[in-house]
Amino acid sequence: MNDMRENDIAVPAYEQRSTQFMNTEFYVDPRVYVPNAETELMMAFVLEHIEKNDLGQGTFVDVGTGCGCNAITVAKRFPGSRIIATDISPEALEVARYNAERYGITNITFVQTDLVAGVNEVPDLLFGNLPWGDDDHLLQTNTKEGLALMPDIAVFAPDGIVGAYVRLAEQILQKNWTTTLIAETGMLGIDILEENLSNAYTWKRVQLDSQLFDYSVTVFKFEETKKGQLVHHHLIYQATVNRPDLNVESGETLIRFLKDIVEEIGVKILIAPQVAFSHQKAWTGIVGIITSHISFHYWTVESYLQLDVYSCKPYDVEHIVAYLNKYWKASGSKSIFLEREVDRDFMIKYI
Ligand SMILES: C[S@@+](CC[C@H](N)C(=O)[O-])C[C@H]1O[C@@H](n2cnc3c(N)ncnc32)[C@H](O)[C@@H]1O
View 1 (spheres, rainbow, N blue to C red):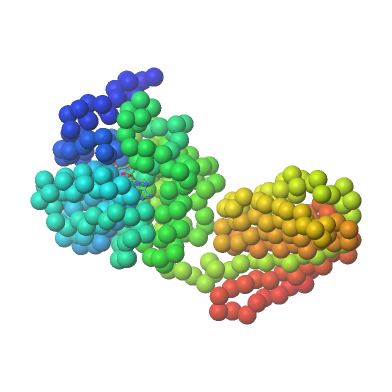
View 2: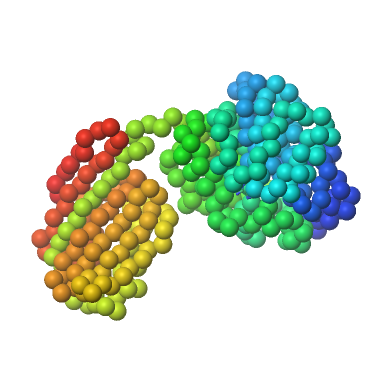
């Protein structure tokens, strides 16, 4: 353990009802997360981004404002800007409002909402330090003991390590915002980001200079929705198969099959695979992936299979057909491959 970790900032800050952030004093109490030194690095990056891109008069969203430290830092530096500071916690917003009042800040609107669900203006930039909820990726200035004193909602994301950012990105996409998001991703490695973030937007992990450790922010860029982003690749496959070993007892095997197919096309599971055996002595199975799905129906008596692989991520269709033929010991399989794109006729290919 190094000195920083032993020096638990949480307790004294609550006791003193005060903490320093970007050379400014903020009121804090146990209703809010105590801002830490790493977030100062992110905010220095945010201020630089605003300056470089000449956004000083812009509209910004601080997602998960906590005590308001990030929003207030920007509001003070860019008095001509407008900031919408959101938090799901009404208690945190009380503290943030109090801090803004103390500095006579009038260019921040505080909104209680889930991420940006309740924000209706299109911002020029969003920034945020959202809960990550993973003990393995604590920053250097946090300790488990210190975090235990902070509100659970500020520390633990119910949707996993980058879950809050994944959900935030989905909200931004749904709103069709053309904008940038700068998110604190701390010590999260590129592998975790690659595993969780989608290609519906571009994103870049930026390592910031820190003498303490490897510290990162991730910059997401949401471009105007291009039709190309809405292409879906749909394989419709049917075959007579030779798998007498698959019977009423084969639920686990078929769940494994759905997981394997998801792995073959290299996407992330959104809705866990489910299978069910029906009175027609047939198995039905489905797994949800982002904005698409894979499903099958297998009649055990007739030894007949119908299967759909519907994916927004392009995949090697010949490889998947070969994989299916082999797995199911298929004879006479037939496939159609459709490319579906908004405002365009189906592109059909027979395989
Ligand atoms: C790690 S704290 C960061 C607080 C402050 N921005 C900072 O940098 O010190 C995360 C904040 O996000 C808020 N939060 C958690 N889940 C949220 C959600 N779904 N929508 C909006 N805010 C959320 C928490 O209440 C908390 O204030």
